[in-house]
Image (cartoon, rainbow, N blue to C red; front, top):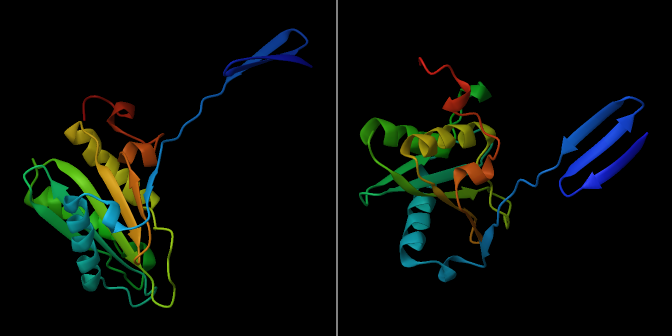
Length: 184
Protein backbone atom coordinates (compact mmCIF):
# COMPACT_ATOMS: atom_id res chain seq x y z
CA UNK A 1 0.00 0.00 0.00
CA UNK A 2 1.46 3.32 -1.07
CA UNK A 3 0.13 6.69 0.01
CA UNK A 4 0.79 10.38 -0.07
CA UNK A 5 -0.63 13.42 1.69
CA UNK A 6 -1.86 16.72 0.29
CA UNK A 7 -3.12 19.40 2.68
CA UNK A 8 -6.42 18.00 3.95
CA UNK A 9 -6.45 15.05 1.55
CA UNK A 10 -4.97 11.58 1.99
CA UNK A 11 -4.69 9.28 -1.03
CA UNK A 12 -3.91 5.56 -0.76
CA UNK A 13 -3.26 3.09 -3.56
CA UNK A 14 -4.03 -0.61 -3.18
CA UNK A 15 -2.99 -2.21 -6.45
CA UNK A 16 -5.33 -0.81 -9.10
CA UNK A 17 -7.62 0.90 -6.57
CA UNK A 18 -7.05 4.44 -5.29
CA UNK A 19 -8.82 5.56 -2.16
CA UNK A 20 -8.94 9.14 -1.02
CA UNK A 21 -10.13 10.79 2.15
CA UNK A 22 -10.44 14.47 2.89
CA UNK A 23 -9.70 15.61 6.44
CA UNK A 24 -11.33 18.70 7.85
CA UNK A 25 -11.13 20.28 11.28
CA UNK A 26 -14.51 20.98 12.88
CA UNK A 27 -14.41 23.18 15.96
CA UNK A 28 -14.81 26.66 17.37
CA UNK A 29 -13.09 29.15 19.64
CA UNK A 30 -14.49 28.99 23.17
CA UNK A 31 -14.25 32.17 25.25
CA UNK A 32 -13.64 31.42 28.93
CA UNK A 33 -14.19 34.14 31.54
CA UNK A 34 -12.87 33.72 35.09
CA UNK A 35 -16.16 34.94 36.48
CA UNK A 36 -19.20 37.05 35.76
CA UNK A 37 -17.33 40.29 36.56
CA UNK A 38 -15.64 40.09 33.16
CA UNK A 39 -18.98 39.96 31.32
CA UNK A 40 -21.10 42.74 29.93
CA UNK A 41 -23.87 43.84 32.35
CA UNK A 42 -26.62 42.34 30.13
CA UNK A 43 -24.86 38.95 30.13
CA UNK A 44 -24.39 39.07 33.92
CA UNK A 45 -28.10 39.82 34.34
CA UNK A 46 -29.10 36.94 32.06
CA UNK A 47 -26.88 34.50 33.97
CA UNK A 48 -28.46 35.74 37.21
CA UNK A 49 -31.92 34.98 35.77
CA UNK A 50 -30.72 31.48 34.79
CA UNK A 51 -29.36 30.98 38.32
CA UNK A 52 -32.70 32.10 39.78
CA UNK A 53 -34.48 29.66 37.44
CA UNK A 54 -32.67 26.75 39.12
CA UNK A 55 -35.00 27.24 42.10
CA UNK A 56 -37.86 25.96 39.91
CA UNK A 57 -36.03 22.76 39.01
CA UNK A 58 -37.71 19.50 39.90
CA UNK A 59 -34.71 17.22 40.40
CA UNK A 60 -35.53 14.68 43.16
CA UNK A 61 -33.57 11.88 41.45
CA UNK A 62 -30.31 13.50 40.36
CA UNK A 63 -30.20 16.58 42.57
CA UNK A 64 -28.71 18.30 39.50
CA UNK A 65 -30.53 21.61 39.15
CA UNK A 66 -30.30 23.55 35.92
CA UNK A 67 -31.74 26.92 34.99
CA UNK A 68 -31.88 28.50 31.56
CA UNK A 69 -32.72 32.02 30.46
CA UNK A 70 -33.26 33.19 26.88
CA UNK A 71 -32.82 36.81 25.88
CA UNK A 72 -35.04 37.65 22.94
CA UNK A 73 -34.36 40.41 20.44
CA UNK A 74 -37.39 42.25 21.90
CA UNK A 75 -35.69 42.35 25.33
CA UNK A 76 -38.08 39.74 26.75
CA UNK A 77 -36.47 37.06 28.95
CA UNK A 78 -37.88 33.52 28.98
CA UNK A 79 -36.75 31.06 31.66
CA UNK A 80 -36.83 27.31 32.12
CA UNK A 81 -35.62 24.73 34.61
CA UNK A 82 -35.08 20.98 34.38
CA UNK A 83 -38.07 18.80 35.21
CA UNK A 84 -37.19 15.19 36.07
CA UNK A 85 -39.46 12.17 35.98
CA UNK A 86 -39.13 8.72 37.55
CA UNK A 87 -39.11 7.44 33.97
CA UNK A 88 -35.87 9.30 33.14
CA UNK A 89 -36.41 9.80 29.39
CA UNK A 90 -39.71 11.56 30.16
CA UNK A 91 -38.11 14.53 31.89
CA UNK A 92 -37.02 17.73 30.19
CA UNK A 93 -33.83 19.75 30.44
CA UNK A 94 -33.94 23.45 31.33
CA UNK A 95 -32.83 24.51 27.87
CA UNK A 96 -35.73 22.74 26.15
CA UNK A 97 -38.25 23.95 28.74
CA UNK A 98 -37.14 27.53 28.02
CA UNK A 99 -36.99 27.23 24.24
CA UNK A 100 -40.36 25.43 24.00
CA UNK A 101 -41.92 28.06 26.26
CA UNK A 102 -40.47 30.73 23.98
CA UNK A 103 -41.95 28.94 20.97
CA UNK A 104 -45.39 28.85 22.60
CA UNK A 105 -45.39 32.41 23.96
CA UNK A 106 -43.30 34.26 21.37
CA UNK A 107 -43.39 32.16 18.17
CA UNK A 108 -41.89 34.92 16.02
CA UNK A 109 -39.36 36.01 18.65
CA UNK A 110 -35.65 35.83 17.85
CA UNK A 111 -33.35 34.35 20.50
CA UNK A 112 -30.13 36.31 20.87
CA UNK A 113 -28.55 34.65 23.92
CA UNK A 114 -29.10 31.51 25.98
CA UNK A 115 -27.66 31.45 29.52
CA UNK A 116 -27.44 28.16 31.41
CA UNK A 117 -26.45 27.62 35.05
CA UNK A 118 -25.98 24.12 36.50
CA UNK A 119 -25.81 23.40 40.24
CA UNK A 120 -25.02 20.05 41.82
CA UNK A 121 -25.28 19.76 45.61
CA UNK A 122 -22.19 18.39 47.28
CA UNK A 123 -20.03 19.26 44.28
CA UNK A 124 -18.30 22.49 43.46
CA UNK A 125 -18.58 22.38 39.70
CA UNK A 126 -15.78 24.37 38.10
CA UNK A 127 -16.55 23.42 34.49
CA UNK A 128 -20.00 24.34 33.18
CA UNK A 129 -22.32 21.62 31.94
CA UNK A 130 -22.98 21.97 28.24
CA UNK A 131 -26.41 21.26 26.74
CA UNK A 132 -27.09 17.57 26.07
CA UNK A 133 -27.52 16.23 22.54
CA UNK A 134 -31.33 16.52 22.60
CA UNK A 135 -31.08 20.14 23.73
CA UNK A 136 -28.47 20.95 21.11
CA UNK A 137 -30.67 19.49 18.38
CA UNK A 138 -33.76 21.35 19.64
CA UNK A 139 -31.85 24.63 19.92
CA UNK A 140 -30.37 24.12 16.45
CA UNK A 141 -33.90 24.01 15.04
CA UNK A 142 -34.59 27.47 16.49
CA UNK A 143 -31.27 28.80 15.21
CA UNK A 144 -32.08 27.42 11.76
CA UNK A 145 -35.62 28.85 11.89
CA UNK A 146 -34.55 32.35 12.82
CA UNK A 147 -31.56 32.33 10.44
CA UNK A 148 -29.26 33.83 13.07
CA UNK A 149 -26.87 32.51 15.68
CA UNK A 150 -27.86 31.98 19.30
CA UNK A 151 -24.92 32.88 21.56
CA UNK A 152 -24.59 30.57 24.58
CA UNK A 153 -23.31 31.38 28.09
CA UNK A 154 -22.62 28.46 30.45
CA UNK A 155 -21.78 28.68 34.16
CA UNK A 156 -21.35 26.14 36.95
CA UNK A 157 -21.80 27.20 40.56
CA UNK A 158 -19.82 30.45 40.91
CA UNK A 159 -17.01 29.39 38.60
CA UNK A 160 -15.91 30.41 35.17
CA UNK A 161 -18.26 31.27 32.32
CA UNK A 162 -17.94 29.64 28.91
CA UNK A 163 -19.19 31.55 25.88
CA UNK A 164 -20.01 29.68 22.68
CA UNK A 165 -20.68 31.67 19.50
CA UNK A 166 -23.65 29.58 18.36
CA UNK A 167 -25.59 26.35 18.73
CA UNK A 168 -24.21 25.13 15.41
CA UNK A 169 -20.70 25.47 16.89
CA UNK A 170 -21.73 23.02 19.65
CA UNK A 171 -23.40 20.72 17.11
CA UNK A 172 -21.43 21.22 13.88
CA UNK A 173 -22.89 18.21 12.07
CA UNK A 174 -26.45 18.72 13.25
CA UNK A 175 -29.54 17.39 11.52
CA UNK A 176 -31.61 20.14 9.92
CA UNK A 177 -34.38 20.67 7.39
CA UNK A 178 -31.99 20.38 4.46
CA UNK A 179 -32.05 16.59 4.93
CA UNK A 180 -35.82 16.36 4.60
CA UNK A 181 -38.12 16.25 1.62
CA UNK A 182 -39.00 19.85 0.71
CA UNK A 183 -42.74 18.99 0.71
CA UNK A 184 -42.74 19.08 4.52
